[in-house]
Each structure stands twice: as C-alpha cells, then as structure tokens.
Amino acid sequence: MPAKKTSKDSPKLQKSKIGFEDVVGHTHIKERLKSIIQILKNPKKLDIFEIPAPKGLLLYGPVSVGKGMLAKAFAYESGLSYLEISGSKLFDLEYIKQVYEIASKHAPSIVILEDIDIKGLLQGAITNVSFSDIAKVLESVNKMVFTIATSETLEGVDPVLTAPQKLDFLLEVSKLDKDARKFFIEKILQKPHDPNIDTERIVRYITGMSAMDLERLGRMAALSVIEQGGNVITEETLIEQINIIKYGHKIETKMVKNLEEEMKMTAYHEAAHAILSALLLPHIKIEQVTISRRSKMLGFVSYNAEDDMTNITKEELFNDVCVLISGRLAKMKKAGEHKMDSGAIEDLAQASINIYAAITTLGMDKELGFINIESIALMDSYFLSQQIEKRFLLWMSEAKEHTQKLVDKHWKLIEKLAKELIEKEIVESSELEKIIGKTKVLNKIPDSL
Image (cartoon, rainbow, N blue to C red; front, side, top):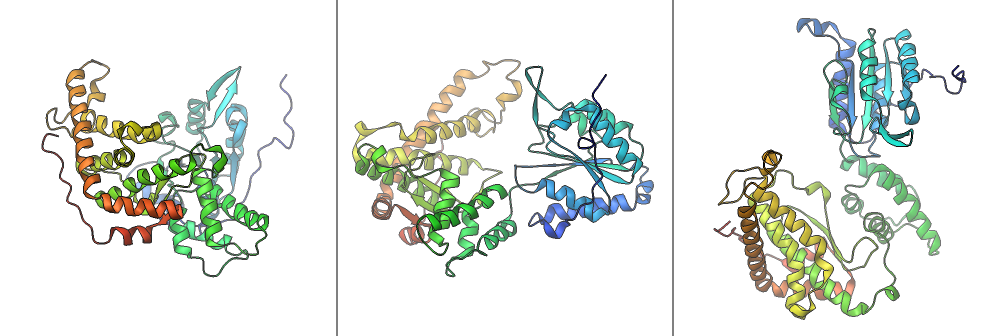
C-alpha cells in the first residue's frame, strides 16, 4: 500500500505577489505575455476563428534570467491562483495528476512546471521527465487550466509537449538586456561606492552574465573591499570581480615559468587579435584587451556580447578566421618560427570549425558551391570528402597568407598595443581606439575561395 502523502507533500494553491513591473528587463517578452493574458480573459475572440483556448506556454532560455519570475508575474497579472511543480515532483506522475485535479477544481487557474528539462535518476539510470505522461494529463484537463513550463532550451523539451493544444506558445527568454543589467548594477551601488564609477561602462562589461552572476558580483565586490581594508566599492574592484566570474582568478606569478617572456609573447598574441578584430570586424565592439593570466585563459580580448554575429556573411567569416590565426602569426613574427607553441590551440580549433562550416554546411565555397553535406551525411558519409579536404586546406592556406600580410602591414599598431599591454596589463576600449586612430582596411576575400 503506498505511503500516505503528508500535508507537507500536498500541492498548495498560491497567489503571486509579483507583477511584470517587479521583473526587470525583458520588455518584449512581457508585452507578449500581456497579449496572451488578454486572449485568456477574452475567449470569445477565439470563437471567430473556431479554435479552442490555448492550454499553455513554454518559457525557455539560459539559467537565471527570470523565467520563473515571469511565470509568477503572469499569474499575478492574470489574477489567477497557481500551483507549482518542480524538482523531483516532476517525475511523480501521481503528484502531477493531483496538482491538475486541484487546479481544475479552482479553475480558471495556472500550473507552473519549473525546469521541465531536468534530469533524474531512476533505477540507477539518468532519465528525463516523462513528457508523454505530462502531455496526456494536459489533454485530459477540460476546464480552464493554463500551464506555464520553463526550460533551459527548446531542444530539451519533447515535441509531444509542444504540440497544438498543449504548450501552444513558445517564448525565448534571452540573456539579461541592458535595462535588467543596469538594475542589478544600481542595486550593487546602493552599497558604499566611489561616486565616480562609470555605470554605463560596467553595464557593458556585464553583458552575457546571469542574474545569479550579478548577485554574486555585488557580494564579492563588497567582500573584496572589506578584505583589502577599503571603505567603498570602486570601478577597479567591480571590473576585477567581473573578470574573475567570466575568465577566472589571476594566476600567481610564481606558478608561471619564464613569466616575463610569457607575458611579452602573450602581449603580441592578444595585440594582433585586437588590432585585426578592430579593423576587420569594427561592428563587434571590444571592451578590453588584457595579458593578465587567469585560470580560464592566458590573455584575452573581451567583446561586448550584445554584438554577437548571428547571420554571418562569407566576408565576416573569413575575417574572423584571420583574427583567430593572427595571434600565432604575430608571436612567430616577433620571436621566430621556432618559438611556435600550443597557446593558439583554441584559436586554431575555432578557425578550423569556421572554414569547415563555410565549405560543408553554409555553401560558401566557390568551387563546391551551394552544398550542405550534413543533410546527406547519413546516406553517404564519404561524399565529396577528397574535394572538401582539398578546399579546406586551400582556405586555411589563403587565410594564413592573407593574415600574414595584414600583420606585416599593421605591425606598428600591433607593437604599440603590445608595449602598452606589457606596461599596464589591461588596455581599455577607449585607449585601443586612440592607438588605431583613423586606420582603415579594405579586406577583400581571395578570388580562389
């Protein structure tokens, strides 16, 4: 006989206390949610088109961007009570059925399924939530019970749950927008701080960070000030903590052999990346260039994540490859080919991926034309393999030759930035702009590609 559920385990009907105004950012998503609420409140409009009322929506996106808060705000704005299912309860079909029974009795109401792409351990094996069982429960509910599910990705949710008359609306909740990031920074600056902090600069630097990262930023900045015997949070403190969260802690100098020579070579490597990136891909803004060694990387060029390229052109892809391999070429120009090392492994990996994608899936190669090998790989995995290999090597050879010319042509700028990095470790975007000045470059893709 199954154990009797305790009152603690029993589903409870709740009233949300937060509305859309309490959720920072996500303006577009909130507008969509408001329009969905209007559909729920005016079901007669659906009769015109002879369609049934929608049964639910899926909010998907990275962790810690406010999906759960948006779901609860939806409940508040719609004036409905809600029940929530999360964690291990998502694997308990009887509990899920019980929740929907209670929701039906108090209809109209809302059921929130939190993180339905969660993995669980069942009989020693990693398993997914039973999407088909949840889908059947949704189908069986006749009364006005609206389901809001959240997940990290759309791919992590079985299509059986996003079929019509289940989770009808699919809304992507992306990374925190500028307004949301500004809210978190202003919250941090409620603590004692230097009044000269450039808020807009910090907001740019935290692009791509989650709400959890930003909560941690405020706490760690304050602890860092206390640890160092200071009285206020400074801009330098905030940027260092941002870099720790994004790129890892600084590596102690005693942990690095030949530190001075290593930093010098890293300076030329990163200087080449930054100079060529600024010239070839000027629409992708650089925040900072640094040779400060961290646990996640040696040196790095930090970009504004809001400028990420989505629909990339052939020219942009080739230029990106040139930027990626410029670091190794600059180090070799400075120290000689015999000093080639493993420091460019990540750059080479990404450059190889870019070129292979251009040839095999993006249809950008002049000789092979508009092909997408992935679409026929299951039928013939060796199709055009020799031609692809030949074109891949040509692309890489052309990119290397092209990049070498660019490195040689702009060597004075690379050297100037490298020397600044050796002296100061970090060069900000404004300083980089001064170094580059009015230098422009017209970068034509080689005719052979």
